Length: 252
Image (cartoon, rainbow, N blue to C red; front, top):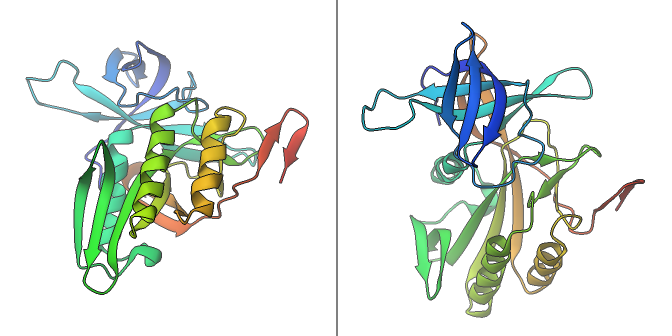
């Protein structure tokens, strides 16, 4: 997925869930749309550089959308994280159609927003030989102080319901896959955030035992003359179902 002429700024604050004050290079403070309904734990960091996409649509109330944030890494470098959860499925769809998700390659058709009884999942893949696979995508941007990635970043009953829906598809004879799209270039593995949502972590372990598959892929952000120019799914990352974060350290 490509970006169109992103503009840098400094994050001043995020408020009312969907709004963010960003200071541009000329000192002007603009209000940007924050397309993220979550807690944004660890990626809502005032003082960090962010990247905004502009809009010329006169019907829009806000002319700017917050796309990315730059976060300091322990090695002195910078990690880029996408805060725009609406981009996630497009990133994954692009990779699925290109066959870059090896574990899900070879299906003849792809349908977005697969409607099921009382639920909806992100993708349905069908093939005469491979059968049907349902895929639910979750964006991961939470990197805790231990350096590892976690999901969710707060209690999420909706995410837990999606796990139950995936398990129901396995029971019905289909393939069901949870795909973590790690939209943070500093995260190199993923675990359920039992320290934030123990019910989600317990449910994930249970549905995996029932046959739900879990995949995680990182994202690569390409730059053009220093400016982020595009984001795409990158390498497969490991998933640990039993990692627990403690004040004193990490126990695997």
